[in-house]
Amino acid sequence: MKFDVIIIGAGAAGLFCAIESGRRGRKVLVLEHNAQVGRKILISGGGRCNFTNKDVKSEHFISRNPHFCKSALARYTPQDFVELVKKHKIEFYEKKLGQLFCRESSRQIVEMLLTECQKAKVKILTNYSVKDVSKDENFKVETGQGVFECESLVIATGGLSFPKIGAGDFGYKIARQFGLKIVETSPALVPLIFAKDSQNYKKLAGVSVDATVSCGKQTFRENILFTHRGLSGPAILQISNYCQKNKAVSIDLLPERDALEILQRNHESRQLLDNFLSQFLPNRFAEVFTALQSANKPVSQLSKMEIERAAEKLNDWQVLFDGTEGYDKAEVTLGGVSTDELSSQKMESKRVKNLYFIGEVVDVTGWLGGYNFQWAWSSGFAAGQFV
Ligand SMILES: Cc1cc2nc3c(=O)[nH]c(=O)nc-3n(C[C@H](O)[C@H](O)[C@H](O)COP(=O)(O)OP(=O)(O)OC[C@H]3O[C@@H](n4cnc5c(N)ncnc54)[C@H](O)[C@@H]3O)c2cc1C
Image (cartoon, rainbow, N blue to C red; front, top):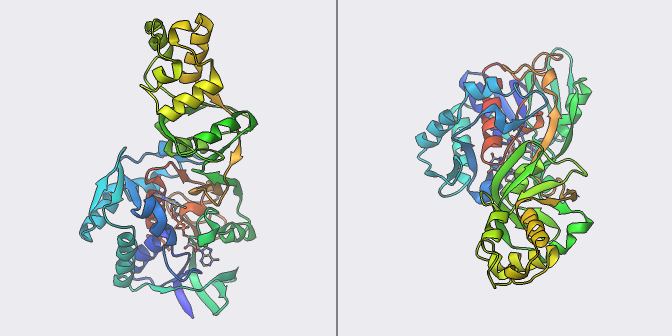
């Protein structure tokens, strides 16, 4: 069976590219190995899909080439996607920091994409796993149920995170097969595991604290969440993209407050330090943190050095991590098909004519907050104009 365009992967990027190329009158086939399309969309944003962010800039993405994403993001913007969502009468709201979520369910986004695919006469086959790809004049795409042929081939197979819902390394294999470079991949937007010396904090599992988390020049202010193995929560997921092994992460547990100034100003307080700190921090946290970091005495009995030490720990708690929870828990994959290999305008391989890579399989990774879906829509749109 011959098509103008075959897209491997019916996720956010693949479906969006299918809509755009179908609208141009191209005969499009999407092959998906899951029984259902858009499984990551369905589970995203806690079931409400944080489908974009009002403020999207190249600074919100990590890539060996920080400029690569600019062209696609400028040609299909968050506003464009919001218009589409409005056209489909999907109610949405801004949760925080420009993050736009469906009011009801992520399912509405998948239904919207399927409706648009239908209008654009896109053919979608689920339960079709692509095993092999070859090229002479056209591409031959082998599945367990037969071979399909196409002029343009789009790889939209996503990254390695969440293998239990179909993620795998197929896209990278195809890239390597055709001689394209891959930027080393690693789990991103992922909970971190404490190194040995911080393991006593595990007893705080379930406690959440508003904090500023920094590593190198990167800083995020949001919640951190203690887990049974380490830390999670939005600020930690964000900083996980920038963490380096053996480099401590600095956590300010009293953001915008000077702990030293507060303790010095209250140096006559007879409250035990943990009770005193529970004005600013959750009780359980104040209790465990004080027990592990300093003497739990009345503030008035703390020596100058003890006050300085406690203040330093509160404003600049240095935490070492042993690693991450891996691809099973990572929202996305850092690295991927090198942007050196692709045209930023078309997403087409510079080496192999008519071979395209879009979405998460490319070395463009967004922050938490709707940026990864915006990259999927924008890169899918870009390729959709040329395939
Ligand atoms: C739990 C979770 C929550 C998330 N929440 C958000 C959020 O709220 N906002 C946000 O912006 N981002 C979120 N993300 C990230 C976002 O889901 C991804 O960045 C985005 O889905 C990437 O789109 P994609 O189309 O490139 O890849 P995917 O959506 O992963 O789609 C790839 C598709 O290819 C299929 N496939 C793979 N190999 C083959 C093969 N050999 N043959 C056939 N089909 C194949 C897969 O089954 C899959 O359907 C979340 C991720 C996770 C895991």
